[in-house]
Length: 109
Image 1: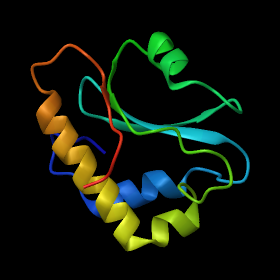
Image 2: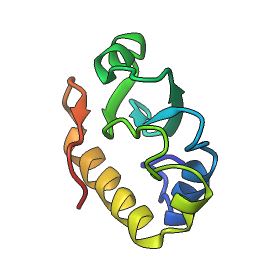
Image 3: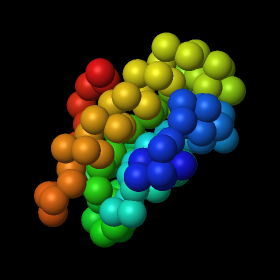
């Protein structure tokens, strides 16, 4: 899913469905090209460590802690949640244009 190429809520739902909520913490992030990624993290990982190792990162959601229901098939089926994340990503992507710093997204639309 690329935020510059008319993304859809269904594309985001597929990305969220790929995560395994019961296995790992996850981070949902956007690279400089506008591609949306979700990566598994070591337990109790720090978002700042992730930022240091991913210089292409432009924006990121808060870390989704294991077992909280933010990723996986159930999360992807929650249309309100997916829509909120989708709207937030699009808003933050638009706000990040022309800025050199990482946008740390703290809340949903």
